[in-house]
Image (cartoon, rainbow, N blue to C red):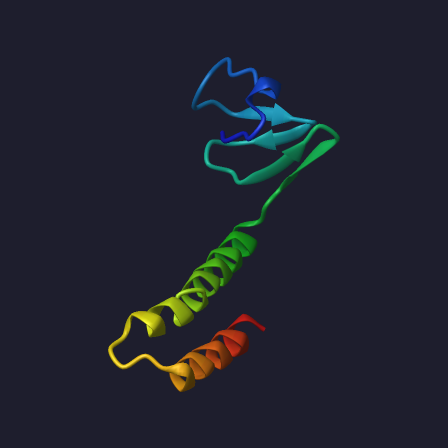
Length: 89
């Protein structure tokens, strides 16, 4: 369990099935929970999100990567910026 607001978490046992707002949770199930409810994140959604995040991280390296290359100039920067914009949309 990860929580950005640890004072709302009361950890009693680890590695057992649990219920959260009436939702049955097994070990390793990805969930999004707030004080008003919880939802299970479906496995195919997790796979798609991981792929999107990986793509986003890679696109964020396009400009810094070109800056670090030998012979960097304004034209290369413009191409890198165009590539970044294409990848992020």
